Image (cartoon, rainbow, N blue to C red; front, side):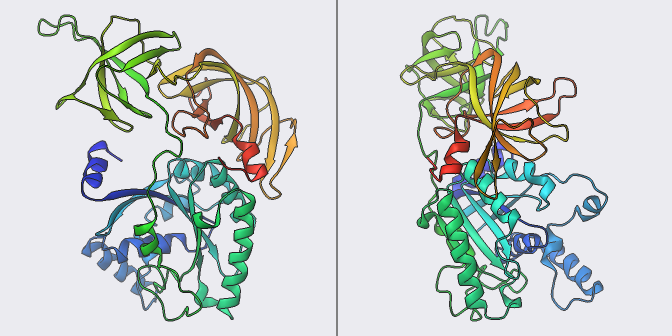
Length: 439
């Protein structure tokens, strides 16, 4: 999403980042289409086109999945479908929704879409209940530290004894999420029919056994939290600005986006990994100077002293700066067809810094069905999650992922092709999932 688009959303209402997850044919596209339709977030000509296409298919009502399934032809051709971002709003809140594929082989996309989500809607088909893919998705979401979940029990209109079915599915899901560390207040189950709109925007008379909020009511009212653990300034330097013009003969500024905390003129900071200390002279933007820049804001920082700062360095608060790491444990989701084995030499990208890395050892692999670990695996296969030990050629200024999601994550990259091979979380996030002890 563009910076301008996000600022415009935030200026009017609170912004909630959410994602969807679920198995194939659980009705995720229909639910997303229903959310867009019921919040009047689609144009009239789009609705007309969907209505005509639905009539051509012999349907009596519009097939709302067509609003979001524009890439169906590509999917049928076997092309990988990436995360699609949808924007919609109600009078009370604006939303950015990461719509991820449901296929098992696209777990990597679930990781990408949910990595910044404050809430995830996890769908299950009422006729199938909680299946292995549901458990896998829940384990991945727990690993990523997603604060809140909604279980949308879809197609509830297609089962006999819906009250019993809903109660049984809710009980099983509650047991699963408790074992993964969520509290009961962070998880809500809602019986829905995305096709008919039951309990999406309007309360349904067809579910008298359910007295909770509709899906949209819940999305409008759920608390929007920032980082669960606040840390001081983390500012990865993206670019060093030195115009060398007559107007700015001695200007030196450091451009980037504030990844965590905030920065003000006069703040004492430390340059990592060198450890050099100085203070902030001012904060520049295209619209003028700022008194403060908070997480998410792109700015140029000017320092009091002429110190050595390069792209990939991190400007951090002097009071709680992280210790640069040359070797560390991390949890990764392996995203490549070729297995990961100990001794692999890769590139590691953390923030704006890219450095050579070697996988010193594979510590354990997660069995997402049993929520148990397999120690010392020989390899990690596509979509498997495991803990490994990494050594890097140049130290990185990173926080534990459970402390800050932005500065505790990284990518592993193939040095030959430039393809992303793994998404990683620094620290022992995997043990937290296994023990049901989310931080």
